Image (tube, rainbow, N blue to C red; front, side, top):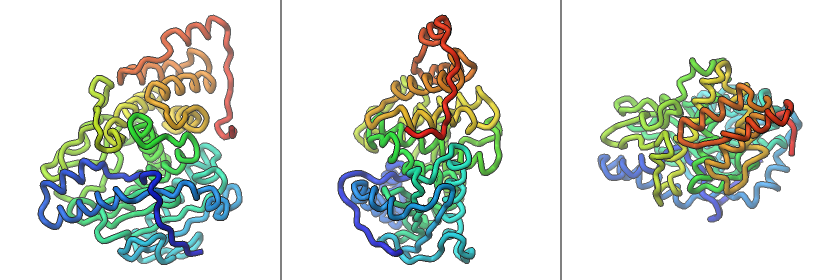
Length: 376
């Protein structure tokens, strides 16, 4: 089924590249780089996800529980979505690396959510996974538009192709999960949480595919996305926010790792790609404290929190409190897991549960096992 859609003006799409990188490039790059950066900024400013149409589209494109259906389109360097159908579920591999990477990456993301959390695709109702590659000319971004994934080719000098990194694919598809669950407003602290959950599960998708334990993972988002010559290891570091890149053309990673350094800004929808470093650091600290595979306990706490506890306007403190409560429900009052959640948030300057855990234990609150696949 081919479909063309325009974008409404209600909601911004969720892009992987922080606007500050593009603005720096537009200011400091050569003529070609400046033109490309300006173009991406202009396109991003006008793109909007048609969320009001999601319900009917998702129903029409649903498949049976436990089945994935991936559909890959080629925009042929135009900006009309979805483009030409080039690969469907079960179809032969393409000679085009981006087609195969989009297909494989969306499949691995689907498998992660289905096998770890029992989730039936992005919307938990079997939504078809559509992806468009070769969007625009040397387009330096990737985004979830409310209905599908869209990938640019990159320019080859600053950015490689945007299907190259599995965690980028997992990150962007998780914006869809968030859309169907907490639907966090894409601005200020709720928007930073929106970016944060995408970074968390983008990283976990990669770790799950690689069968990596927490202490062996790189905790980098977009490693390998920068072209050769750019001084940076990735777009973001969950382990050490603020250290991912420092380059004359694209600037310096400005993510804070603690609430004392929280950035108040009107740029970037109130700093959604910036301040996400704070909860990112908290999740990393939790995963390292618990050890083992991060998706098993740390990831489960975060998934249940996103699915059942957060609302559109939730802020950092709300998220911290919710994860603390969910850890108690999943693993018991004053459990190793609940204490680890408290300590992880404390590292970034957010306090939770100094007294509630002790009170619960004193009152004899027992362990409540919550099935992470249970729906609301």
